[in-house]
Image (cartoon, rainbow, N blue to C red; front, side):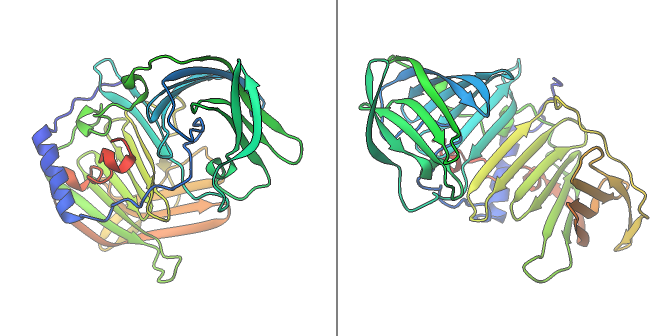
Length: 377
């Protein structure tokens, strides 16, 4: 991993976030969490339970897997193993949020992943007991129909979960009318104290000063480019490109991506059509499967508002999706063309501004980095 020093002081970062907040105080204010949904792969938790550790085995998509669930309060740590290896993530049991992260030797975060379930229940029915009772490991458990909590779209399939009287999930099952069935069942259960720091996200997880990230200049000459597809109907697309030093931010109605031209830094934020936060990822590591670098495209250069840009093919090697960027000599994005399964979208700059920018113009807005907006406190 490449370690990159952080040049932005805490005071500068705080001032930048405050400035950004003053400019756009509510643009990224999140909509309320989806009610009645669970985080992906979370244990069903209809009520509070004592601290415990459950080991489950089962199959998923035809693969044998082992899952260890450690719960303390409103959070659980899931460790999942199959033929592809072992992964660990934290899930909130009061909000539909899953979190995972990695740290470098210096303790700074090199990878962050937070995903929230989007959409609503598949029906007006909440999760409910079916009236059935099962027995496992000397424990009795009540069977619940939890389909509405885990399915994003209407389906003829269903999910079931079996919960002890004190709120511990002993098994979870998926079934469909065509006879397919997938199940995880507990092979051990221990009620014992679980350390809070083992199952809850660190309080500084969303602090950019704790990320192994590209250095951020306090201020400097930068560029802001507003692009659109020249439509005025419901198919209108708008994007804003911002560049300050080596950092670039490309933003549209659903979120933004921040990248660096000097280091392997990539940050993505997404929200759904209702304005609910659904994804925040950050990585400062080289990808395990490197992407092919952009290559010059055959298209003729463009002249937009007196500025010349050259076309680059940004996605060589990909199928069903292609993106072409038209960039100036100093890296500003003046036009973008995307091809997805026969459809094409072309955006061109309608306004380009070059002025002095601050870190607040490229870093994520303060609302996006507020732990309260991600149910982290």
